[in-house]
Image (tube, rainbow, N blue to C red; front, side, top):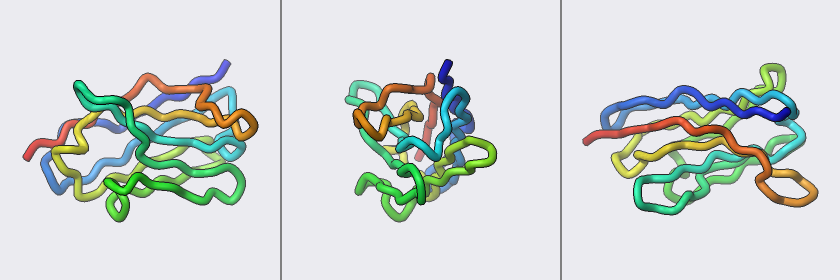
Length: 119
């Protein structure tokens, strides 16, 4: 059974940093493209960042480039999202997801963790 468990969310001030974690069980994070998505109230879920299988190249949404960094710890089977210079518009529920590299579907999702940034 696959489980993705996010943690590390919270309430911070603009300009602060947070690090989100996504602990995986039932799959190996280095064999999937692991992504972070977010959904703000009243908005659709949007892509934030991803780290690919194997050597782990990364992709970012333009809105977070230069501020967020996605990384992966293969030993801990965990994916991280380091978020710096947070802005109020980063406020959302953040979800971790695993994309199958054959079907390209994000088949597995975590329950989400709330990030709130106040000005």
